[in-house]
Image (cartoon, rainbow, N blue to C red; front, side, top):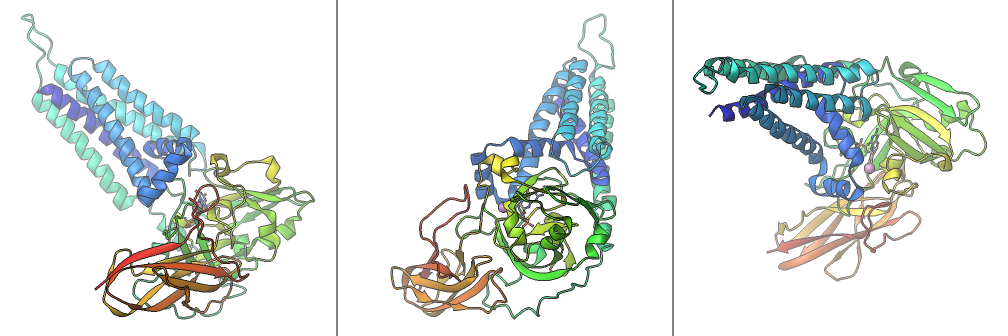
Length: 505
Ligand SMILES: Nc1nc2c(c(=O)[nH]1)N[C@H]1C(S)=C(S)[C@@H](COP(=O)(O)O)O[C@H]1N2
Ligand SMILES: [Mo]
């Protein structure tokens, strides 16, 4: 019986350590040891595993990774508690300490949202200390009574054990609760930032097409897709933020957040797309951004001959390589500070990120950017290209059917299909829909201001009873028809036509 209790005690010891560590991580901004391990797992995961995770888990992959690591910990902690209950107390405490040390090592070496070493070490150190102390408190219980001369098994002070474990569990629960109450949501950091008035404001938004189920022209921040490789979102204090511009430039620049806001600011609608988006997938969104033209900054720094790329780095050390030409050819590439009328949400790069029309996010849209180096592609490789994705990745012309949903049931008679199409920085000229194997018929296009956003489309058709397949294709402003050749996201973006099967009755 008390072996089982030992296992329970081990789990509680691990739980309290993780809970207290989480609170410290939240307050300090340093990595929770579980996340430190998780980020390294992400970096080490082979490409196909990552692709699978994105494909089948989507944004649930992050919480699942946390759960997986915690589950592994719980099992080891249970075993440690069990061993401790059988009298090998030092081993049990040693295992707890070993696990804590692993967390500490990963906190030092894996990518992390924390800038300085103290913040980095704090949560893992506290977790380690609590883990060791809690495990010791748990396992000493069964062995308080000395073995008696009659060689009876050690007396087990059940009451004391239960008290200890309850106290530990309560500490864990209180820590978890405290995280919710006093935890740094970081909201005050964003609240202090006033959305700057753009030097060049965008025109009023045209009314979004209003078919139930269609993607609105502007994606609300809360619905905007998120793709990155951190478990803990950085919460950078803008007062500590600085962008270093260096490399093949005449003059190095260091730009503070206030200085950035003091520069010429443009407001633009730009659609972002992730290279991992499958045909018809959700990793695309459109927002109204305010930011500083990157070309202005480059002009001030003075680009030297021979440069053809920029290597940008986010606070956690992740790197992205962008063709210099996309930043200087007149398109609206910006250091964005606002998204849909708000300071950037933390998940989307607060306080500053890059946005470059026409390029997939992994080669252009650096969130939490802190370093901007003008360089040559031959002189570096970036995070994603090290993992098998193409060095250059313009966005492929795509179209998506939002309504009807796949396998929806539709009433016979006049029906409507609707969705979005995008070919950033070229623009969409035409969208066509085909019912079954019929002719391609033009869809109606919503007005847009420019080539850098997606375009909503609607299509009226006469639904006849039976099962039908709707297929959509777009043509970009250069007259290039979207290819029907199917390609997976890797290495430079999916292609193929999106279709939806509907039941008409
Ligand atoms: N620092 C950082 N920036 C990043 C990434 C990342 O993993 N880390 N992912 C990129 C990718 S792959 C995409 S598609 C876009 C997504 O931006 P969003 O999460 O704001 O939609 O951010 C890009 N910027
Ligand atoms: Mo992406």
